[in-house]
Length: 260
Image: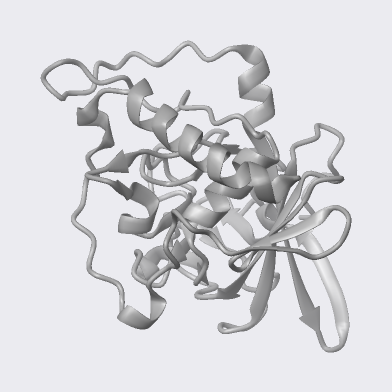
């Protein structure tokens, strides 16, 4: 069933993103470097979908589970120390300030969110006036959408033959206080198309700790206004280059607290 819905959902979500906001807001704030040809994503209009079992499907390198509303995709550790602005970027993204790298297509990830009925929320981003400038005003997003757009991010990896899984927040700490990032939610924001191209695919922004309109996912709690707050926690993070699976699930307020 999900295979037949994909062309309709993809076309509908693309049109909705393009029409709901003024064109000025869809312009990326940077001109991204062209990605290497061997990392170019598959044609987004013809995503490769494979049914794995009764509930799980794979879109490119992104796996979605209908029963648990869970999304998984591969990443690898990019850095464990230093200031972080981004949690996850593509290979042509801002790798000098990102914790994890991935080679997935952001189009495929966005489609997985849509198929699992995660509503995007643009609550973090100021509206744009007719001159293309930010108004300082924020969209009135319904409470149900705000709640539905909040997600939890976990990381899973092999630790000397043992599979470990922890909330990604446990890998981050306040650069001044040395305290761990609280178990706060992340926000699925969706994204726009600009001149026919999906903005996160252009910029390489997948998940941002500091508010970034071009990123599919943003940190939804305090201290997300600047890139000088969060750093990695070296003792918690496996070595650079370690393969890590990123796991996305609906956010629950009953999630355990991050370990000190």
